[in-house]
Image 1 (spheres, rainbow, N blue to C red):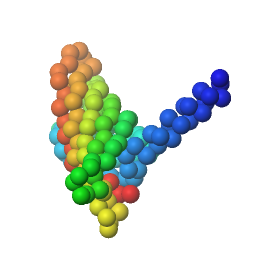
Image 2 (cartoon, rainbow, N blue to C red):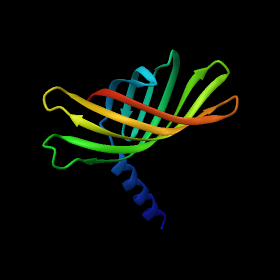
Image 3 (cartoon, rainbow, N blue to C red):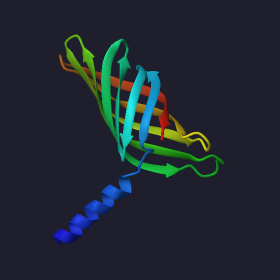
Length: 141
């Protein structure tokens, strides 16, 4: 039973291993207007300037599937993320869901993506409000 569980977990991890294109990237959007990211397997780490403050996030890409019928090498993906932004009173934390489209360019080693995020912005001083974000980025693969 232990071996089966280990094999099943290994298979799950390997199936998620290439959930989104690995590599370094640059992105811009709202509220982060300039950011850098690194993707490995199904994890993405990002850091950037967020409305004049420094912030960062980590995302777990849960699935990626090709978009059929466009004639382009395009995939859609979704996942979960957790971010934080430095604030005067501490940190603002934002757990969120995300979904996006990734476009693979054939000649240069680039992928373009567009992503939306929806969640809650939790203030460490108390309170919360809805969190909406979007980003456009380039992944260097």
